[in-house]
Amino acid sequence: MIAAFDSYGVAFVGVPKCMSTSVLRSFYKLEHGTAFDRAAFGGNIHRFYRQRVADRIASIEPPDLAGLAGLWIFTIIRNPIRRLLSVYTNRVCDHRDIAKALEKAPDATLDPMPSADAFFRDLPRYRAQVPSIKHHTDNFAQFLGPDLARFDAVYRVEDADAIQDTLSERLGQPFVLENEQRSRVALGFDDLSPEAQAQIVTHTHPDFELLAPFYSLETSLRPRTRA
Image (cartoon, rainbow, N blue to C red; front, side, top):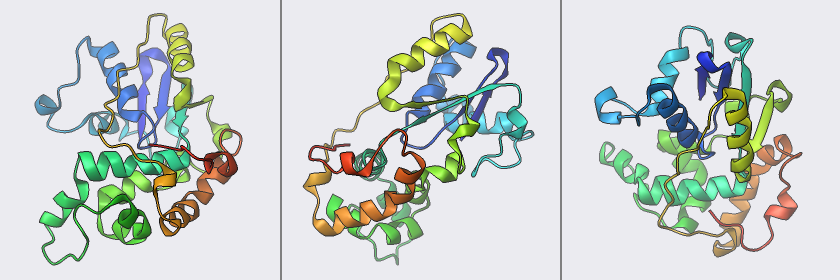
């Protein structure tokens, strides 16, 4: 997900479940003086900003940043295990992505509302059959490329105050991150079975390699890693 804010000299490369929607809503409000109206546009805010760069970015995923030359480019990352847990609580439970997808595929054998344990044990099959689940669980390199050094700044979701401070200084006016809606479901890594945990560790291994300067698998496996 790439958004260019040329009037501010800034570009953002987002990863699903890493505050991307919050950043886009905040910039939209700054640019237009009002909140984004999904109904009026006929699509979500990601589509709105994707259309704005379609004629200058050869590839969105993995990202081709050549069309953003001259802009200050930043991204936001998240603990890979927390990100994956949040896909279940937000996309499966809150948004019912699997259930909605299976309404169009009556012969599918997937459980439309699986338990967290069942979802993660069978993650490859859910990724293969539900496009939105694949998109939200694709590895970080799919959205950021293989080298974080290409970015002028990399923030963790835990750095929200620093993000606001840096952008406020760059933009010359207050930048306030819109509140991100939180799931009503709480889920911890230690709530899952060894089989489900093993599937998560396998899936996030490339992420921990890419994000090694920021997150470690060893630390993430300690109790109380929650979405």
